Image (cartoon, rainbow, N blue to C red):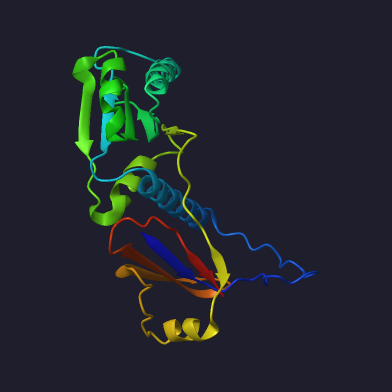
Amino acid sequence: MLEVKYYKSIRKRNKKNFARQINQSKSSEKQTKANRIRGEQHTQRLILCNFAEGDWFARFSAPFGEFTEDEFERVVSNFFKRVKRRTDKKQIKFKYIGYCECGKLGKNWHLHIVIENCVREILTECWSWKNGINFTPLYQSGNYADLAKYIRKDVNGKKRLKTSRNLNKPEVKVVEGKKREYRKLERGEALPCPEGFYFYKDEMWINDFTGASFYFTYLANSHKHKKIGGARI
């Protein structure tokens, strides 16, 4: 997936001694929404850079155990240690993105994580409650946007987001955009798709200080490219 964002920057690139503008903070509602969107986009990018069709969104639950949050966190920590020891012996990377949460009635703590297919068997063997395991296959339809929203849901409430340290990071490029391209976008004209990609979706929103911003998502024709790009005006 390739993402391209056109926007006007308050600060000029490569300009020394440029005075910073007065900090104009957003309202708490706008800031909360912006943080949520950025968090979802970052999680989606991490999924795309590390997982694909054939991998799994897994649920590991403790159906007969009653735990406090800290107690279940220790259960999960020990579970990860057991998995890591086995994957290290087999020279397999153990990558994951997920969270812990509890059922609505305050019982049935469970762990949700995205995992690669190569570690599925090891995780199954290491989990203490064999009747508390469920696997859902990953499908690339929608590029995991819905999955990212689900993972980030209530992440500042009862959830603690968990990610392994060995995840591949998305590639981000910030370049000086062409003013004529930005003017075309303001007039509602379409820009050509980058080579090797096809158009997926676009969005436009208005910033109180910089004006219109344009966001485009393209999918790779081969479904093998996993780059994140950006253009800055």
